[in-house]
Length: 85
Image (cartoon, rainbow, N blue to C red; front, side):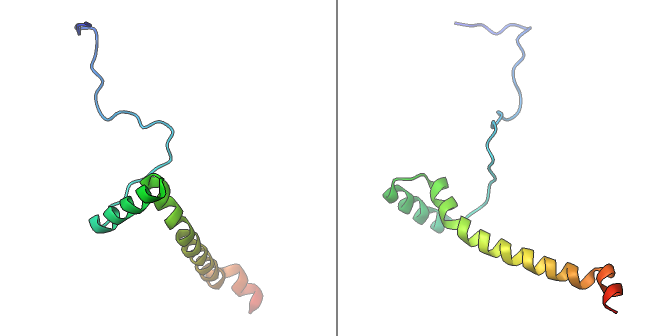
């Protein structure tokens, strides 16, 4: 048995998460329960299941956002206004 001495400092704070590339979000409890059941039935983890379901939708919505932002930038670019007028 190891005894703690005065020279052994106790680590404080949250443990390091490593090199994971993750983020958290709050989901409706009913949706999460259904997603867990589906993931278990498919034999995959909840994270893998949600990534698979969300990735195509987010990719589509993000592409629309990029196009919308590019259009706004083209409309407000002073260099384009001077050359076009």
